Image (cartoon, rainbow over all chains, first blue to last red; front, side, top):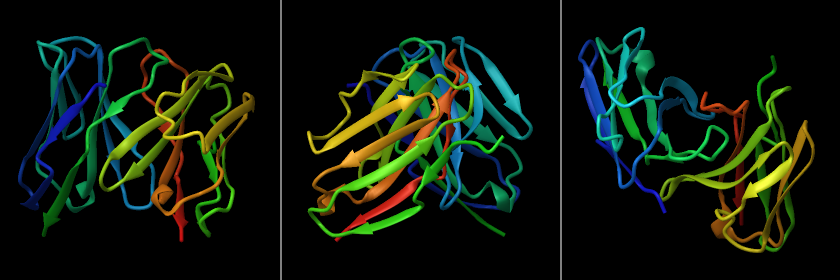
Length: 112
Length: 113
């Protein structure tokens, strides 16, 4: 089946630093999404990307849909304590109602 | 909007017992997904429904797992008999389709002892 390789697995950073994480796929996706999960809760959608090369921002978050359609990255600028959590990339190769394939997640830990 | 509602939030059961997890999707959403999350395997899609019809159940691990969606506002995931390796957090998510991503529930943490 489809696999997503998400890296890094975890990040320990200082408050105020920028963060970068990425996902690569073994197959082409036509949708890339980035989610954040807080402890004890389900993942929450941060950014959705629908076109190769697309660059989308949501506040301090910026994500890009890779040109090859096999990768995506997420950047967080000027990290703050509430950015702590697990970030997941997810991709879909089929139609809009098909299931998403998720990466294993990036654990972000911020030291004040 | 109350979001996707899952019950129970926590379930502890003995091996061999039947477990039923419940989900109420967001009103108007026509797709419903069941995921399982573990440390080792991350988020795995178990099964999803479109307009109450099961579309892909290839992620259901074994015949011990079954899912139903009798109407647009309710779905169940049943494990019978349960085993310790079924211990995980089970998430339900719903969407309107069209690639807008899902809305997840808060999950059910299942522990089988």
